[in-house]
Image (cartoon, rainbow, N blue to C red; front, side):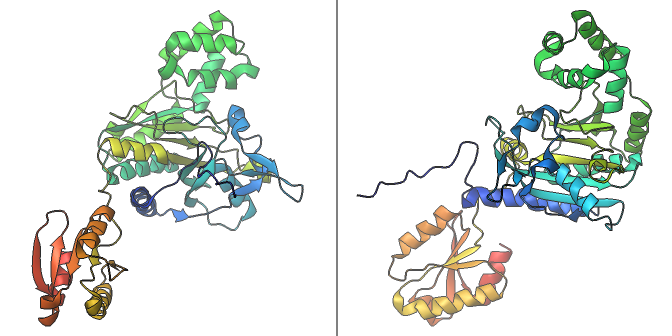
Length: 414
């Protein structure tokens, strides 16, 4: 006897059934419209890159890259983020117009320990500007974040902003040795989570003595925006975004390729952490071309975005893509039901017909209700004789008899 296979998927990976997929698609479409309203163009890159393309770009997080040897003996890796592939694209296609403004919404993979809001396969939603040193590009990135959040229905949120240059200057002031600067910056990034005592302990674990670790915290407490942040903040104030951003001197971002301003998005009443992050990375593209190209961008954490929208009731009801189900009253009326289905589709309505004429009407209506189809059309002998149909609202349970012409209008504009 054949052994039955257990239906299961690897830990950290998920199926999205239709109701959930529709809600995710709703958010993706909102993101696309927000990005495109600022002139960003879509880009897609392959799931697989050569491992050397991704290696050496992510600091301590590099251990999370899914790497393996293919059948040809080539060392390849699954896409870890969208930023490094973007750097490869810009280097590979130098004819792209600059500034190059692109958005990319594709899955990425990280071999990390799955937890709430974090998965091994997840959707990343990035937008970047490549090819200009102007801090107007950084300001536009912030503007896009604010515009996107508003389009999604969020009202109470804040973008924390800092600078990797400023952090490096602070480490020098605290007398942190050059070889430990990056490690110390990564420890500082945990200040909000583990507090000052935890940071001191983390810094000493990373090789700093207690006196230097304490000095780091003192420098942080009196930190002020440097020149580039002052320019950026001025731009943001000019476009009326003062309420949406704050200077956060302990913000570091874990990735090592950042070179200037860095950003992180926090939403009030969502305890799951930041909903996205980004910043300026002027030296990453130079790793492919030996000539640096300025760049700045941001990535929304899509899974946390969905989770936050769910918590704040910002997602639409789980309705079917079909606007109406045409029932089949009996096999004798199948022809008229098919004709009505065709007419409704021609009028631009997403119309489904029940596919088994032998099933009782009650079961057909229950099917529509379970799927979240808002309307059902009943075409019985009386309706057929008068060239009418009964429209039933499956949410309110109200029903009315209408002509086919009025039927389509009622479904579109109830």
